Length: 163
Ligand code: FES
Image 1 (cartoon, helix red, strand yellow):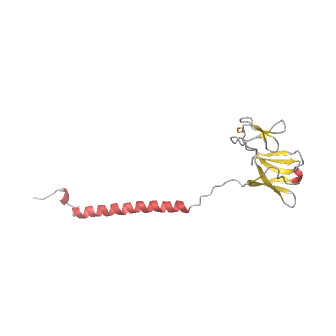
Image 2 (cartoon, rainbow, N blue to C red; image 1 turned 30 degrees about the vertical axis):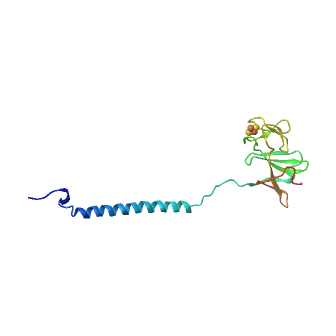
Image 3 (cartoon, protein in one colour; image 1 turned 180 degrees about the horizontal axis):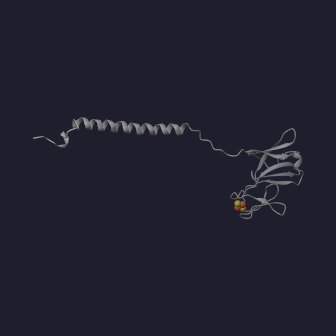
């Protein structure tokens, strides 16, 4: 009589060999998954992590565009460029309370629409809740008087560019 148990079915060969082949394939599969994960991690590490932020320097016109009393709001940069008695200066338009964008008020100063803070034209707080004055940024002029404002450089109040 013919023995047809699972271990001796025709066409399956030696059951021990089948188990060995299965474990070998399982091992290769685990190594492949691990290798792929490592390769993806290395590829992710090699990819540059760059934040594309707008440039901090921008052109702001010419010295002659800012006679005393001129207040211009650069909406894109959120900066005021002001021709003051002591010279030209650039000042942040971002409220020091919670970061709303201020606007020139009809009262000759600057006002925040969010919680009512007010500033004079040099950025000093005249009405809270803003805790600090508006910061000033560095302004430089080239040989022909073209102005460059750098919002990454905060300067002390009062250091206006002499026109
Ligand atoms: S954000 Fe300007 S007063 Fe609050």
